[in-house]
Amino acid sequence: MMKRQPILYNELLNAEELAFLERKELRERKQFYKVVRMLILLSFICPFVLAWYKAIDGVPNPFGYGVYFLGVLFLLGFSGFALWIVYRSNLGKVRADIAGGSKIVEQVRITRKQHMAVNNSFYFYLDSLVKLSIEVSEKDFHQLSEGDEVNIEYTANAKLYLGYF
Image (cartoon, rainbow, N blue to C red; front, side, top):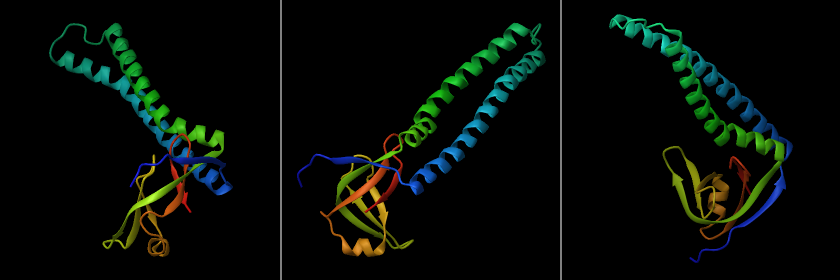
């Protein structure tokens, strides 16, 4: 089968999809802030614990302010950089999708069909840029064949799958 150019177009998110994204953003934001609080706490506790190990080993002046705050600043900087990367790659993209209010509809071909007897689920494998497979209804599984075209919807930034038709 010859490789074809992807067929993509934008549509506005409907109210249900926007609500789904807002719920997802709220859950992820709560989880993100839990991690932020934990990392800040650890940034202050770890240098203190390290100072106790130094004190046990007999190092003179293990609880010096300079070494303690240097350790805290290093851990806060490292944690902040890691958090920034995580935010930009996850939560920031979901927020951008909510602000943008649009989704991408991609026309794709079914390359393979598979029934999973273990949990009685049905899958189409696709030639998509973003989504390699989707779970479909039993009716659609039997109605469509390999080579047929379906449209899948996903968000523009986070590439969250929204559905097919």
